[in-house]
Image (tube, rainbow, N blue to C red):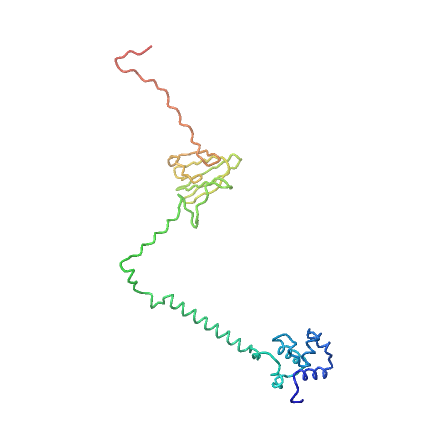
Length: 266
């Protein structure tokens, strides 16, 4: 190796030693033939500005030429001084350190914003002295019907696509018979504190043999049948669950006697 050799001469000698032509090297590196010729003749001014050093390194790496051993020749190539390539391990270490600093900063902010157990009893600021905090309104009581069901969060709809809600609760034994106009016939023995809840579609009739001990609710309405213990009762209901009360019996037409001392009219 001659000490006065230029970068172009080094690249040309390495190419010839590798048995590559200029056309083959240009095709492999996807460069123009004019670019290869300009570098091998040290005609750096004909190359695009700022591309002389990167192109020289690219060809030198392909031809296994270590330009670090020819710093004097490489300094003649125009262009800015190239920076040292970044170290991956150093970059990874820097990212870890930045992540730890970010976590520490977030923990410090939380410690300053959220009071700890020792800061739980703090005095009120001076501008709040004399003011009292308004008490929060009590939560609304849960809606409870006449017969609340254990575990029920919302009351059942009185009427839905499944039919009319019928609820019976007895304080003593009672036989209940339910018959719908669609031919449905149900019989159930009511016992103490055992509710009977069911849904019926369409008009129906309800028959109780001991109505005085049974609370009846149809479509969410309490039915006041007014029967005593041991008295039977039968009620008829329409398709909307309305109680069809029987018409009151007319009073007997009793003749009123005339006042004393007046003759009766013929």
